[in-house]
Amino acid sequence: MTGPFREELSLTTQTIRPEVTATTGDFDEQGAQLEIRVALALAMGGPDKLAQRRASGALNARERIEGLLDAGTFDESGMLAVSVVPGDRATTPADGKVTGTGRVAGRRVAVVSNDMTVKGASSSAVNMRKIARLKETATRNGMPLVFLGESSGSRVPDSLGAEAMAAAGQDPQQYCRRRETPWASAVLGPCLGSSTWYTCLSDFVVMRKGAFLAVSSARVTSLAIGEAVDPEALGGWKLHAEQTGLVDRVVDSDAEALAEIRRFLGYLPSHAEAPAPGLPAGEAIAPDADALVDLVPHARSKTYDMRRVVAGIVDEGSFFNLKDRFGRAAVTGLARLAGQSIGVVASNPMFKGGAMDPEACRKVTSFVVLCDSFNIPIVFLVDTPGFLVGVEGERKAAPAHIMNMIHAVQLCSVPKLSVILRKSYGQAYINMGGGRNSDAVAAWTSADVSFMDPQIGVSVLHGIRREEDPERFDLLKAELSRDTSAYALAGAFGVQAVIAPRQTRDWLVAGLATHRRERTGGIGAHELRAWPTYI
Image 1 (cartoon, rainbow, N blue to C red):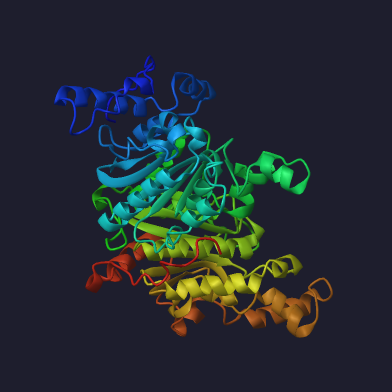
Image 2: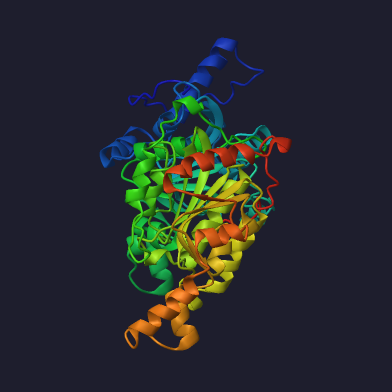
């Protein structure tokens, strides 16, 4: 930060002498004028508005930057920018958006922090130029880009009229992403306009409870449709964490949101042409391998929480779950294995028996895109009866989401390892890394693989239910089950290893060492880098 914020500041634009320029006045007077302008920029919307923010429990734009970055590393760009409208220049310090670069855990990052105390952080011609320049800087120099979102949308009346609209369309790449560097966004208050758009384009989104994300405000929406609108139902955290899937993590405070972004960035490289970062393997704490036997019931009909299994395999305390409230039949998240950053994709029998629905497919697809774009190896943990069937799934275009998912998995060029824990049936076997869709596949001794569950197969093939003729049903079921074991799969070279549960971590560590893409330095082909952010 350039200098301390001074609440007692009571300067006005009359203090600034416009006639003092680079060619008039002496250096002392010019320096004094510069100090005044800097002080006005640091004062943001003034003491009263900043006091209101403190009373609400929300950090201001500059405090958020301080909380995100390593101490003393912020280098601001565009501090003295103001509105192009002459009458607004005195009331638009930094034009409502604070931009610049700094460091997170020693690595350089770019950051945009919206200042709601200045015209509601509304988007304008000048502050959009600031963001455009910062995006170019981040991309050109290989830096992650962080958006600290809170904005009232486009600045009115500046944005009204044909002339303003013509100016708004001059950057054809404004909202185009090729994932050259990671983007992270925090939704920390009302997010409208560009704050919404950049949030939806980001690789990681954390949302504070009480914040809001939508195309238009509840008031504008209410006027447009002629009925009352509940802001929480329109754009609250539950909507986006549980129904739209736009939010990866939910927190209670600004400080927690900033910590989540710092943690997320720790798993990713600074840019797409660098391998994923890791920690020394000696620092990794391996969980108790024997505990896996107790976490997964041998009986296929019994459920369990796959998230506990993931935590029982990866480095202790390293699992960073993403979109945990959305598409819950699937688990996606970042973790470390012997210090190396990895992505985890797993089915979760705790929800819908692990049957993958359209939301789960969308969740996995977007995560595979993230991993492929930034060179993060993927581990599949499989225990699924297949894809969820039913009218509701078809209405949500289930076949298209299933194909999107396998399309992404097959285009994904990072190392992929798959472990079948219990069951893997039908097309889901392929989507979850089966066959040649992973570099290597292992099966637990309890694995069961087939086109469909033998119990369902009996009813389909022979038209009987167990309650109708238990003895014959069990006989037919045993007949269909005889070639579905891990050993049958290994015999056909459908897996490269059959392992006991306690061997899972060691097999994965060895597999990642084998398939680390030495010829390219761990850098993938990035065929998914321009994949849409929301499928």
